[in-house]
Image (tube, rainbow, N blue to C red; front, side, top):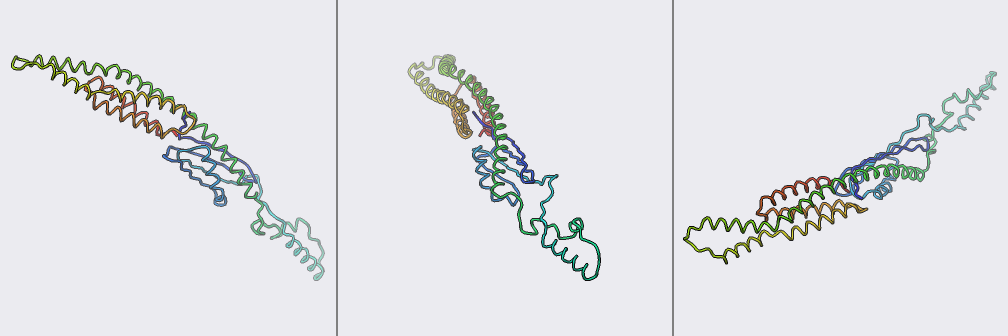
Length: 298
């Protein structure tokens, strides 16, 4: 099974009064490049998260975006400042005794006074989940997002593999036509050369069958494309096998396409036959289309 290098995945989790959103995008790249963007306080998790991404993909540029937002219905955590409460109550008693005033300090009065409540930052206390807990949550969210990305890459990869296989079938058809045409090239050259010599022979020279045979033999050796055709057939089989493999095969396929292109170019330089040359042009066009598709296969 082939995998595309283009994909997208996302996930969202709620934890510790926050909403954590994770987006993962991937595009084609020669190697595996992982770029993670996350809040500064989570920088410590960057390397473990990168390793998690690399478990799912082997090639491509993967951008990971992690965002943290406080829940709208979650009030900021506060602490009761017992020291301030005691101070206010002591001050109220002192004012009452010294000045003979009546009245009591109620709970409502106390809670409305400044400094009675303190935020965690003011007292140096962190009520957020422990770092280890955040690491677990981020790992879980990233795995979900990566599963979505892999599903998209798998679907797109299947489409690309089918397209490449159809083009390989077209190449095999052209290859079969070349195999049938190859033996006739020498025969057509022999007939054309004999006819031309016959037309030019005005009796001023003797026709030498031996030299004629040597010329045909030299031409046959020079235009022989049997080896190139055999190698092309082997490359077709290897490509189809790789398209069904459960591993990254993009680089191997790219190498095989380069080899096919080289063999086709050799055939084009050897072929002294119009129909063969036309088949070479068609094969090169198909190979270029395959090469463009392989640029996005992992």
